[in-house]
Image (cartoon, rainbow, N blue to C red; front, side, top):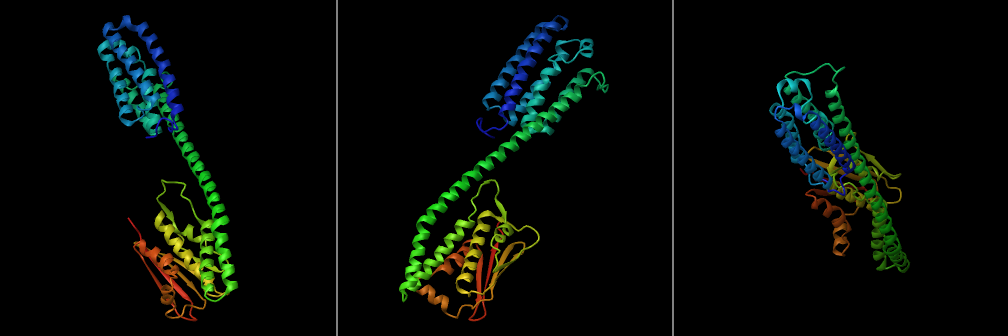
Length: 377
């Protein structure tokens, strides 16, 4: 339940209480006019005091927000129907047949309006039907002469219209909130991009440049700096900030399709491949690291091919290239020298998701990563 300051239907609740006040004034005029005709006029005034007291309680509860809950609205419906049926006690049978129910149908419409705001059009129309059913029970018949008595149509129309207005208000509020989060996310992304570009990226670029100029052992340091600079540039250009906390899954195809380029071919299923947001993001990042390795080490003319397979209880992404491949023992040697990019950025990511990453490669035969993660329930 939204708090009072965040409730998008607050204006409707306020307008409903204005209607409640007017309906109470009308009920007062009706009570004064018919009280002498009632079978138990004193009891009529007692019940009218209950009506006014309950109306005041509802107005305070709905305006302050603590009444905007299902139990309160259901209680209002029960009270309204009970007061309508009390006509049998305060008035004679002939009077009940010749007049509307004692508290007046206009006042009873407050229950229809409250239900429509809380539950939507269906709840509002159902409550309107309940109110009219109570009225029909008093008269012992349903009046189908809509030309002379269209109250049932009015009740249903009020429930429908107010319910649609409430739904529209909530939808507009949600869209506004998403737009605000998106705007904040874009601003934060631009801020981070500036900070990374002005600081870390420039330092890495300088290290790579100077390392290549000096040569010798520093060339390896330059290569590491270049790899990290590319990784940061990819993150800055493709990081996706979560702007909808209610969306727990994403289509992996959407994330991977952003990586298609002149040297990268994608083969994606024709239907969505939903994964938990964190799992999809990490798997996409691992694919990105594999593609970075292709661009950095497979050779200038190498092409990469990405295949996504939805296996039901698991998802597999294969990243293959036609480059120079990796000689036997080279990866183990890189790890011994502290270059753990592949083991951390690809294997480590996939294994942290409960999956496995297999590398198939040899000198002159290109490389192939097979990344498989289970679909978490």
